[in-house]
Length: 619
Image 1 (cartoon, rainbow, N blue to C red):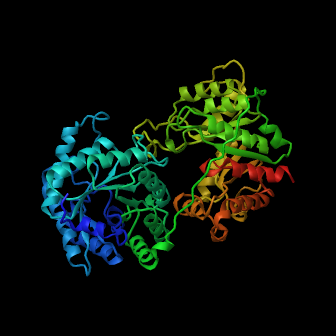
Image 2: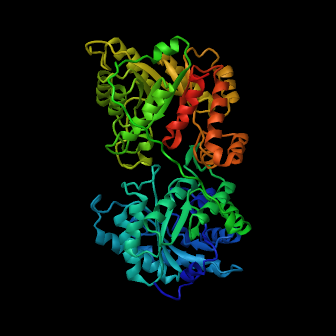
């Protein structure tokens, strides 16, 4: 790196974080450019549009803008027949950003932007490392010709690839290098690397700044930043989150996190030690303006971030209870049921999981719901977890059974295996798409939708027949649950699916987390007054104001009223207990129409779920 670098000089001033810009692609798409088009080619075909967006980010307060060259490498440009224009597109891209920066009233830095090659590298793909480095060198040479202040390597998922990009940048010039990786929902890269591993490898490769970008929303990246700084405490860090997890609405990709939410997190990122703060997918000049205002109007001593989560551990005594399924009997008797969700471990250790289930059993939980590969991440088979819980605790289980990724052979074999292991309750769902998990190229097909699987179980297996009508020896005795959305964006569609689920034999329903019981009841009263099957209402105890803000802003389908969020904010250090009190109040309201509740303890806070259950069992 060069000692005369304005970028490194600005970082060395230590006068606060450098505020970067937000998404280029999001804004281009909002202005009518289709995702199928080559955004990088716009540097040549519509430079005015690109320059206008740079100017808007500068006006919003950005002190660092990125060239519109994210996909301007040989491999990606070849998809549009532009592979011979790598140098020109990159050079002009930097020049457009430089012109906008030069017209700014204050100093604005320019980053030459480099994204992934869009191909798999060895050992996971066919492109060799030397080929990858050559492609990066070709692109970076074009960027350097435009005279940027630094090279930004971003949205990388493969540590092999990011290393080749950093080495290419160092071979081409002495410009500073910022290298940034993206993470999936469980805080690992697509190839399974942890934040600590990423920070250590990027630092070892020679990058001047270690970055996190894209991924989920601000809450996730704040957590990852903390883990990276623990692993490499002396490094400089950059944080540029997406505006929450995207969802598709009426054919458009929407991001839930708004500008005010980003303004709050700008302070947290600064407090956590970020040297550069910006935005990625879904962010706009409005998000950057909010971050700029928050940083400019808040004294450093008033910056804040979230609290740590503590996992409680208790000892386990091995038991060998009689296996069986009693959920149907409990619901039929009118008993108000408490079901609690747990996630299988990512590795071999089941100690914490069993400690949690013992605590829940002592509190009086009726059934434990075992999720199957939540967020499409590799975890222990839920069949094994069901068997462990059945064998070591006096608790029955509900097996989450996604149809995605299973053909008819596997579905039916898995059902037989579950029944043989003592599982009697199954919760049928579609499952998360593999594209969001750690094996995005894994098979994602399925032979049956959830409604079809419900029919197979209730009208096939439970009468002793498989899908082809052949005998399976004796009938199964599955009690089948399905999902029910009581606050749907498309009520007509929800009702159509609901009717199919009922017609095919659904025995009970589980809902998403409910924070507005009156709205849920209004939906039932209007659309399903004679539902006929029990509902377990989803209740997710909130841990603090930050947790509530994350769910409200970043998780599609969850709306938390302002009054609840304000209560958690006012509770301060007592927020977890306030979350328990709120959960109890919600349960008191849903008891009018729900047959039980489906508790979803966040951060494996089984102790909070246990407190909720104990409140009713000690009344």
